[in-house]
Every structure is written in structure tokens, then in C-alpha cells.
Image (cartoon, rainbow, N blue to C red; front, side, top):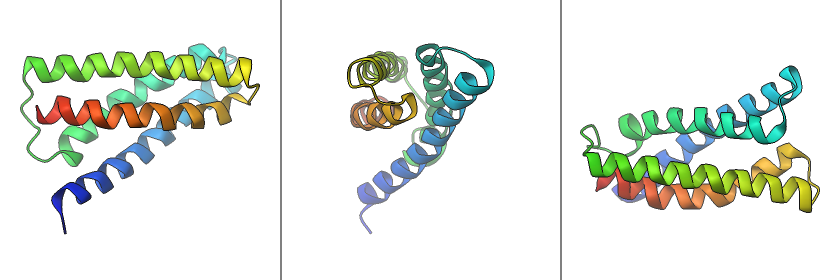
Amino acid sequence: MNERFLEIVRFCFVGGLSLLVDCGVLYGLTEFFGVHYLYSAGISFTVSVIFNYWLCVVYVFKGAKKQTARQATIFIGSSVVGLGLNQLCMWFFVEIVTLHYMLAKLGATVIVTLWNYVMKRKAING
């Protein structure tokens, strides 16, 4: 089977696990601790990015163990932009479209995932 195809399958699997972490932390902070959804979304996104990065390095992108400063900078920069996109989408979908924050999270995830794949692949593989 084509290695790029398997890489994409691994990326989607890791993305699914990261989504569970992201949504779980978002829901837990908002519902059980009363944190405003935008703060919860920022925290949950950050936690899931760290989790996702670790799995991308050890599982998704083969041979990615040694990262250069340039690669780390691209990865971190793309994650910061991803956080901004996430927050903007969350606000837009909740406040303008008036979706429940958990549905808004799914919409935000689709948009941010497209950004993340392109940038993380570039960051990790150089």
C-alpha cells in the first residue's frame, strides 16, 4: 500500500483521538467547572495540540524523531494560527450562527484540520 496513503490514515486516526481529547476537555471545563466556552476551547485546543504533536512525531510521520529549530518553529507557528482559527470559528459559529458550542467545535475542527495537516506535514518532514 502507498506510504502516503498510510500516513494519511494514521494522521486521521491520531486526529480522531486528538478530537476526543479536545472535545472532552472542552465539555468538562465548560459543563463541570463553569469555564466560558471560549476559554475552555482555547485550553482544550492547546492540550490536544500537545497530544497530537507527540503522536505525530512517534506514530504518524515516520522518521520524524529529530526536529530542527526551523521545523519546530513552523509547527508551533502553525499551531498558534490553528488556535486563532479555532477561536474565531468557535465565536462565529456560537455567536453569529447560534450553534451549541459542541456543534461549533465540530465545524471549527474541520476547518482547522485542513490547515493542520498541510502545516504539520511541512513542519515535521521539512
